[in-house]
Image 1: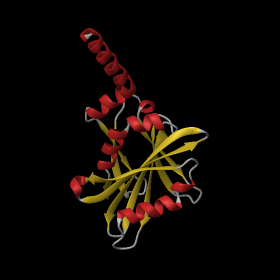
Image 2: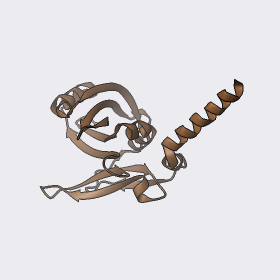
Image 3: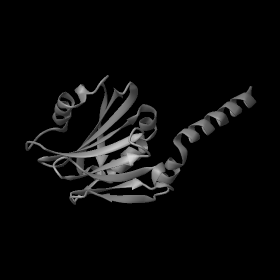
Image 4: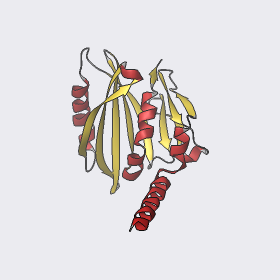
Length: 187
């Protein structure tokens, strides 16, 4: 009986390690890549991977108005995608109200949207008030997960770090999305 328990424990441990993969080991090693906003407004660190296509990497593009934007991708867009948006808010606005407004204006329109939990989040040792809101949705019939971090960087500016991707991948990347968000710095 004891032998079966240890065998099962070892098997479960090997399975979990295979799900997390080498990227989590790299993330814990402290090796990171600095990513700067093309407009010079912010920077953040992403865990370095042995190969660019195996971990987080930045893709710079230009939108229809000619503005440069950056997307941070985990492997491929379907696995994990980080988009960073800046919002101008009224002085004295509360993060809870900003999240409710963002939900009603953008998130509820996602197919199969299901609201998840919200929690306070610590950025730069508590210097930046922040909150995390999670949600599920579908895209092309596939289950997806979203994790939005709302950072109140000053009285009138909020940055939203929107992580989306396959439900299984995003669930396993929680520690990495937390680390990336905590490294966010406004210039």
